[in-house]
Image (cartoon, rainbow, N blue to C red; front, side):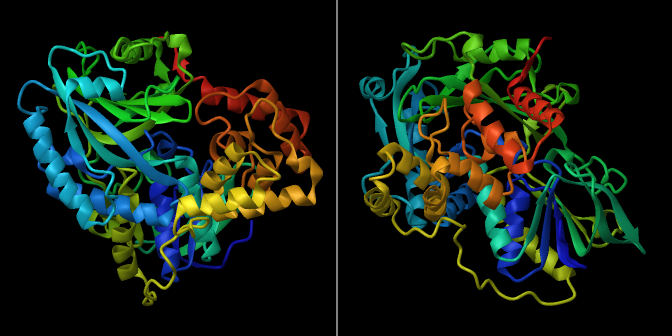
Length: 542
């Protein structure tokens, strides 16, 4: 690990907010180190519905500011990474009663159209509309209920792979001059004369200790924002509690549309009577969520059997020809998010907005900025807002943004045209489905991955148990994307396992390549396989 004598900014936490901040800072020439105790984007940032909301749902609550911000950010992110973000058609039934009626949705859609057209993100053939009950059933196999009066169609955006989107921020920041380190755990802060002077770290894979000297330190650790080593420096007067956000990965693709359904369920364990669940298509699976449960640190990244039963009960019977048992759930995504907890609800209500906290104002400690992070969609906006506070604390004036607003691999003006060109270029070497997946995963870096195949015949192999994932991708992950563990490759680089545990033969193949590259001994092999097994063991007994 090579580090500099001093950094302008050290960021602790490389989820979506820390990664986006590293990118924003390096665009302005600010020397930055990004530290993550696990792998980049391995926490709550990896546990999402993959939807980049444009702000329609906020209009239901007349929250114009959040709607406008979401619409602007959605358009910005489309430009940043056109290979990873694409249009997502959405549909929601309308109901009897005023709040979710055809009239209410019509007003909301009209305002939504104005927001998105102002931001230039809506194609002429992507217009929102109200539809009849009959039309609703032709689009989605929903079991109609008496109170459903029709439906509403609109267009949001979907991130093809949220783990790689976060990684793109990290790798772009690195290309722009940042030093980025995963598995670097901050054990202590060096505070001198009321100012944060350095972060003291330990590499969790090698045991090496390092000292990162800095002018400003940013706590972007998400759910660990008040944990060691920050617990001795309270930075938030009214500290939020945390709740567990849960999304299920179910086999089968219900529809090409993301479907929003109002679900009324029993009020148990702090559950809310009426909630909106989204059924989002991704590949041949469906992501369903989000449920919110009381925080249970003792569970780790897991839910109880009873909580899973409640989730499945909410979903079962909502669609024709889509029935399943609890054992059919392919994976459970769980993240801890900040919330306010009232006396009436044990679960709590998710915070509406992220917060940027200056420890100088709260506790008199200079040089420490903390981010209470909430929404994936607006992470870049929060990062941009954080830059203003950080720059005010630096001794020198950062340069203006001089680097293009594109993430590494996203230098694409028209993705369809780009894909067509790569299909012609590599059609004699790869299947059309493999080229499409590589183009979506790596963008313009598809050339780097394919080039590896030309240098080594073994890297042309398709990983056993996968449809078209290449051995070259494992090599690329290790040599170019700082993948140091089996979980890094399976869950966050290749996409082999982000929708469920891959076949054992795929795990064994990847393990073999990594063991050879990193010279793992038998004890390390056991730890790696145990770790990947724990990633999918998300359900515990009550």
